[in-house]
Structure formats: C-alpha cells, structure tokens
Length: 123
Image (cartoon, rainbow, N blue to C red; front, side):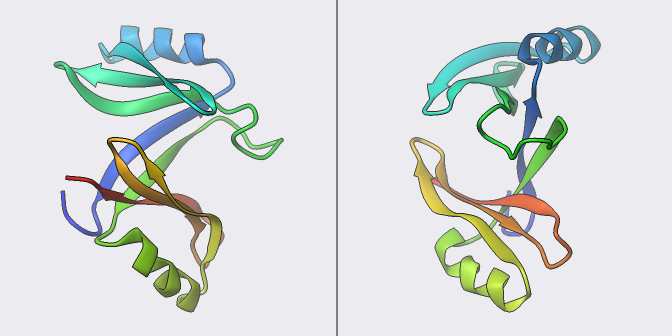
C-alpha cells in the first residue's frame, strides 16, 4: 500500500456475534480475537491474513450513530498530515495515537463532515 490508498476497514456494530455469523457464512471469513482497551477486537481473516476488523460500537462511537463500516487511508506521516487536514477545512476528532504493532492513527472529519481514519503503518 502507499500514501493515499485505503488500508483498513472496521465494522462498528451493536451485534458482533450476528455480524461475525453473517460474514463467516456469506464471505467465508474466520475470526481471531485480540484485546484492546475498548474491549475485544475481532480480526476477520482471509487465508490466514487479516482483512478487516469488527468491534462493538458501544462506548466507541457517539450515541445514535448507526452500525457502519469505517475506513482508514494510509498516509506518509499521520502527525504531519493533521495540519493539512485542518488547512483543508477538516476537523480532528481524535489526535494521532499509537496502536501497538500497527502504527499511528488519527480520526478526522473531512471538510464535508465525513468521518474517516488516517493511518501510518509501522511497515
């Protein structure tokens, strides 16, 4: 992947088990659990490699937000890109933070109000 490409997607759901059952049956995904501060994070696996994430949205997204897929764009330097986001009329919802063994992530809104993640991976 390179700067500007979509790098990751997470399903934020209020029914993790139902979502896992659907994607297991419809797509053939298997799942691997990992613990994060917000609770259990499920890696959706394809041929032994992570393809996406699934997590419970309670306490993670604002109340009233419907279940949804959340996308991340790869950027060359998430910390440096924040000033570009602001200059372009965007908003920072969560300042850059480290995720062990993954990289650095920030959550933003673009100038039209669309939320997305920016990620600078470790590799």
